Amino acid sequence: MTANPEAPLRADARRNRERVLAGAAALISARGPDVPMEEIAQHAGVGVGTLYRRFPDRHSLIRALAADMFRRGIALAESDPGGLTGWDALVRLVRFCGEPELGALASALRPWLAEHRDADEELRDLTTTWLDRFERTVRRAQAEGAMRTDVDGADLLNFISLVSCRMPELTAEASRDATARYLDIVLDGLRT
Image 1: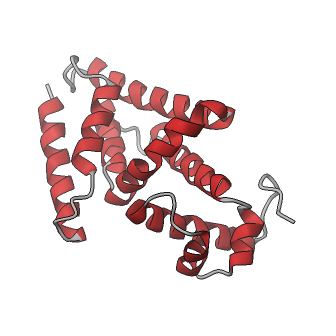
Image 2: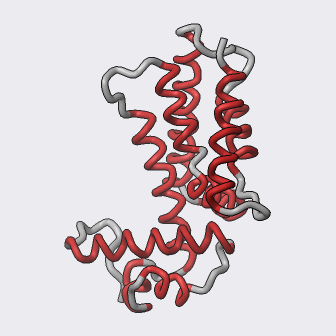
């Protein structure tokens, strides 16, 4: 018997779900989507039954990770603390997308999304909304005259993907530093 994923969760169940998602994100980012479910449960510090109660199979777990990733990006793109300029909002989104953990997860999920997204209305909608919000932020920065106009949101997301991939020859800290430096170079090249 599995829990209804739409039902409100008790605090302890919500914490366990978050632990499972965090553990799954870490392992899938490092080893790909085929990591055993039992290892995910162990990494998350929960029992296998707890994992399967919330996510009855690998597909539902990976789907939840992908949906969560898009929702976080959308929420950030739609928030406007203190009336950010278009450029500042764009820099904030670029830094979010360039977080090494998020970049590694997005890279690991890309083949799964390519295979499953079109058959999943919610994931299609989340993807469309995320890309729309990102593109709006790009256009806003361009309309302010802060960003060159020959680059669109898709270009920028591809740049971010290229510069934020994990470099296995570097330590995690060195890779994080390199990504931050490369993102600064990309952003500097985008300014008018």
